[in-house]
Length: 261
Image (cartoon, rainbow, N blue to C red; front, side):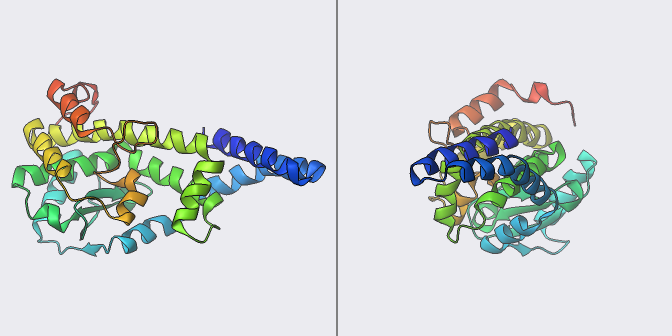
């Protein structure tokens, strides 16, 4: 689907170039791009690590010591789930996220403002939610999809310019990634509920819903955050908190989990 989205972007670019008289040159470039750009995107997606480093730097990530409550909770739950314990730290935002290329290369971060108001059970729920992204592999898939896209928009000098370019020439891929971003939140909530109880997970969602408006960095990287955009459209990164709570109450996605505690 990412490759098809790439091709769609190339076709749009070619059609827009016709009035400027590119003609045969444009056709040749498009045909070359049909092979070269997906190959480049796949290589970047698999091997480039700059995306994670950039996000951690932008979010002012600070690794916590091994005896920190966040580190201890993460280690305990990771052992329960039989996955490697990720690097753990805090950020300044009222948010949380997991990022990395695979389970052995994962980082989990929680916002310090969020940590200050969580009960021990709620802390287990939100950490379980993030570990759910790690264990299911959707964290790695999201990272791969982002890196694939960045191989095309990375030459644009500004973040806002890259956003515009992404929607102009990578719309199919972007809509697919956003759909994946919304769906994965339901499963991560279900894993958090399986680890800490659905009441704790629901309580965390209510606290996130009442959080201050997200920063520009959070909005730009909303697909990776526990709290993202929830507009009623195909362009939302997250389902609404109402839908997430309703799914937990009905245990819709808990019943679909292949892993049980």
